[in-house]
Image (cartoon, rainbow, N blue to C red; front, side, top):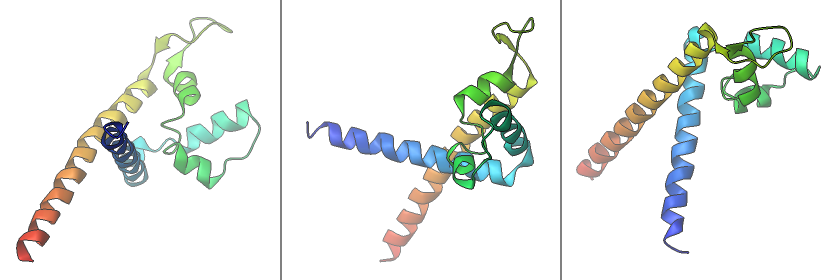
Length: 121
């Protein structure tokens, strides 16, 4: 059981750093900000107004599974399952790739800062 704790800690840190990277990318680059589309989707589906916490937890809608399916695919006929990918799905995949690259960059920067600080002590 004790061997699983470092693995669990790694997955927790990786998940948090990927979420933070995605949040930074979505807030800095308008191309990755799905706030308007996610707000329209949420109002249409639930009728509930969008809260700031829900917006942040879903990385401006990009990590909402049902929003990805609804917005990233087209249905071949009215009322049919959405199975045909469209250009919006490509934007979400680009956000996922940019998130991975930016997360690695943040970890490299953190380790470099740690080495610089520990070398001066």
